[in-house]
Length: 285
Image 1 (cartoon, rainbow, N blue to C red):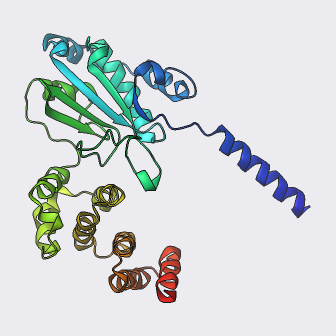
Image 2: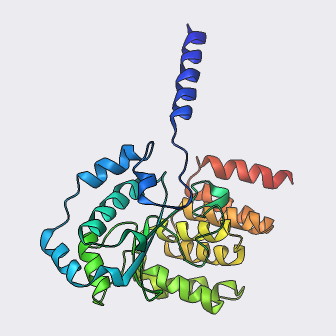
Image 3: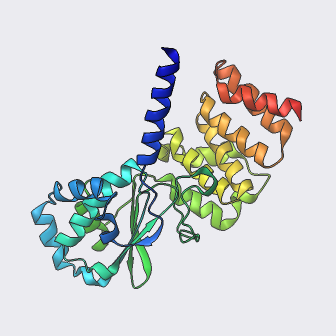
């Protein structure tokens, strides 16, 4: 009986794998999303979203043809599956020209985490998807990150009319400033001091953890380590944060620092499976 149950389980797993939609990668158009297998989630999300009429009227008055928008998304990402169809509904209702809308699909795979197949996302500072970047005369004037602050159409109106607007991940602006200034490449920085500067702008440990992994996977290892160091300063009781820092140290070849992190993970969470595995590897080598 157990043998037949195992075979059934394997067949179900193989069927599920075969049914998994391939990632839509690189530059594409809304028409690509309107085709299967992506239409399964795009069409219901698009058709079931009704933008607020008076906000759409105001958007139309701003002359949307003056603006361009780049939508960086993951066809594998639940937030993208929810927000991208809604945004397309907003843009079309407001009369946003299709040729001014550019979609860029990125990878889910950790080795190329949130990267385009030809590094099309390079320089865009994408830490979360979807990210909606609005341009006027080829200059970014605002972005919506992962989900709207109020609603997609209200957020867009603020951006297009130059009203004060800050997306949900306030710490990313400071992270980008530190990256540009070379602060996060400096081995002598004090992570506690940097953490104090952005403490009120970091809502969850996943905010900077995601940012750190994006940097790590694009081979900005020193910068990633310092982002993870800032994160453990902000969330000193998080085993997951120390686990991420341990991984970054390991990739950097900093064996003793990595071991110390994983040992601390086990102090916080004695049953943490990954920390046990990584410590065993580090102790063998």
